Length: 174
Image (cartoon, rainbow, N blue to C red; front, side, top):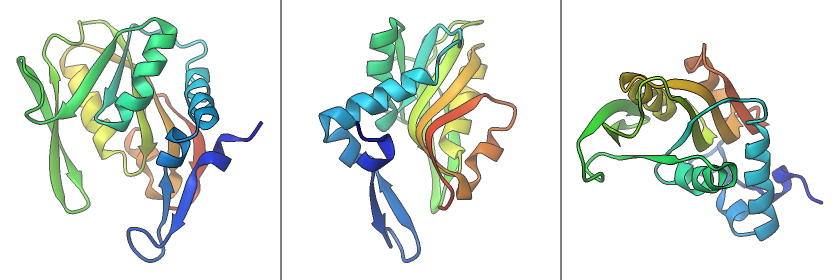
């Protein structure tokens, strides 16, 4: 059986020279790779007590929903501003060029619930930091944050200091 790293396509000099882009679509496009990715992420939750899984649009949905299904947990979507139909709370975060805003339904997390946050990749950590603020604003507790891939050179884990962060693959560079 192949290792998960063998399913990730690495594209040099994208989006700019000197960057190696870690492409998750090559994992998604291979049935064995997808199964290995989901199973590996589920393994990051061994011995973690939690009530809810939340994931960011869109790759957090791709990985979070099958994990929630397999573990018999509800899934809470965290979406881009303006995409949820009921009353929401929102958080802004900085991007390389500008800012963005994400939202959750106000009734999606109950006070005291333990939440696992799921996304495909941690780079600078800004998106997940905004997710944490939303969960905590609703009275939830972040039990663990899991990623398929981590770009350690961008120091996103440092931004999440004090939280339990785990990733399946760690790349040392950017």
